[in-house]
Length: 350
Image (cartoon, rainbow, N blue to C red):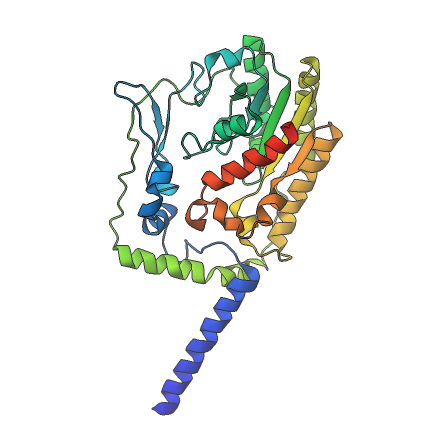
């Protein structure tokens, strides 16, 4: 009996040390699928009530606002809520559609998904460069081809005057836009926030599962992430952008358009995905896949005289690279993440 208990104890200690070592040296993404837990459940058991004040937002009575129901899978307390401009984008003064200094184009990271005023990227950047003339026409779920067509459409429609262009490239899924939609006709329309909906600002999501069971499953999904990284080392990671020429053609067309509009400053900011930042700077084949995409974006940016800002290095060089996400989970950036993005852009603009 003693030998059996000793064997069990030894095995337990070995597993403990083995998994802890893998987490330390490899890092990785929580194994949500294996332990049957999703991001809304993970956020629910991770959120800290002491942080709620950091996300507070309120509107005066009878204010018409647009609420994007995203809080349950991001900060856990509040959805994104803002007064949309006349063109359906996030809170741009309408006069900026005709005369501005800076135009920002991107996807959900561009609109600062589920981060409210004054912590969104546009507000932070305005403060850092002391310039209110920043127009952000980012639309969630879009990529380079759609964004290029959108910019040309709006500028032509409004005869917009601007001298600086900022293009945000998110390595998580922007390549999908080029694979699926390149060459398709894009309707010349405004942003996604059509009108107002005065939806709920505060999150009322409450999972039906037991809180402590969810917390235990989240612990296991995090504790086994290094092992998951090891297993995924032997996977095959295909090229993300199927046709490099699609990106080059998109870039060339936009660059020619910006030249025709006498735009002087052109910047592209490369936003890393959570997976990249979760790895502890190891030579993982998935990083090779992501780096090949980054090299293409950087090479193309320099070819067309864009300033290239490598966000993958900036965020990975932080003491805790996952601190830029809500509760260190695979979400969009938190307040800190967007503040860093704005800070790096301000260095180029100043």
